[in-house]
Image 1 (cartoon, one colour):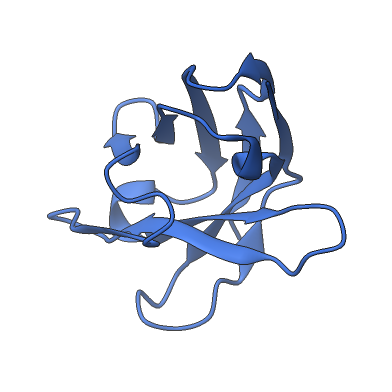
Image 2 (cartoon, one colour):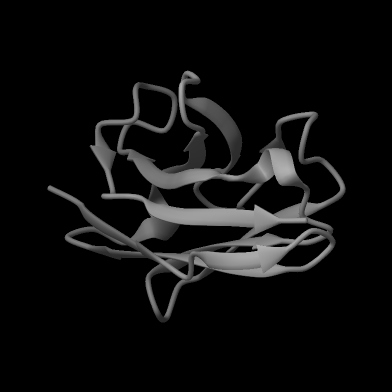
Amino acid sequence: QVQLVESGGGLVQAGGSLRLSCLASGRPLRLLRVGWFRQAPAKEREFVGSIRELPGFTNYADSVKGRFTISRDGAKNTVYLQMSNLKLEDTAVYYCAADPQNNGPYDYWGQGTQVTVSS
């Protein structure tokens, strides 16, 4: 079992930055693929990016590439989503998820954290 808790969401102006955290318990995140997803009102959940198990390759959706960065702190068992140059369309609830099989479904999900970008 893996428990995930996101934090760091809030209200930020367009062009600003925010860092989300995904704290895990139950298993070391460095052994799991961890993904970030988001869901805006009246829209389907979409993939934002992910970081694989060691050595930690990352990939991103085109809509956030160059603006968002995913990193991991093994000592804190936490994965981060650093978001820069935020746009209005980045407003959403952001979720982290863990894939224990590293190429399977994301079986474990956090509760989400709200990010609101204002003009």
